[in-house]
Image 1: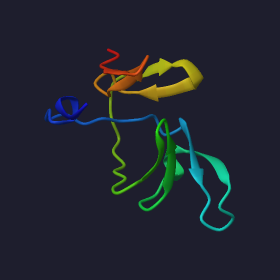
Image 2: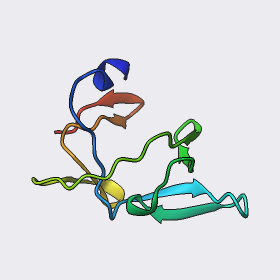
Image 3: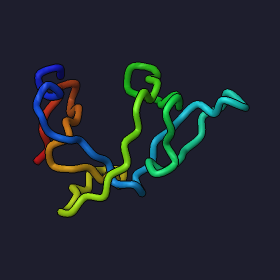
Image 4: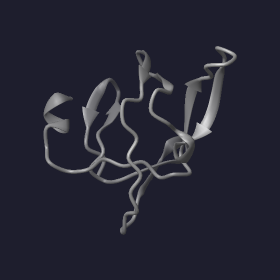
Length: 89
C-alpha cells in the first residue's frame, strides 16, 4: 500500500460518496457524505477505525469510477480487493 501512496498524484472520492463515522456526540456509527467529512472525524475502515487528518476539497474535471456500493473515486485511487491493494483504473 505504501508504494501506491508514495506516487505524486492526488486521490479523490466523489463528494456524494458515503462513509461511516463514529459520531462524537453519541459514540454511534453514522453514515455521512464525503462532502460532510471533516478533520478529526473517526471513519470506520476494514481494520477498525481511522482518524481523518486532512480533508482537501478540490474541484476536479474528468470522470470518476463507480464501484460497488456507489463509491465514486478517481481512477488513481487505490482500493482493497480480496485483501490486496490495487489500482482500479
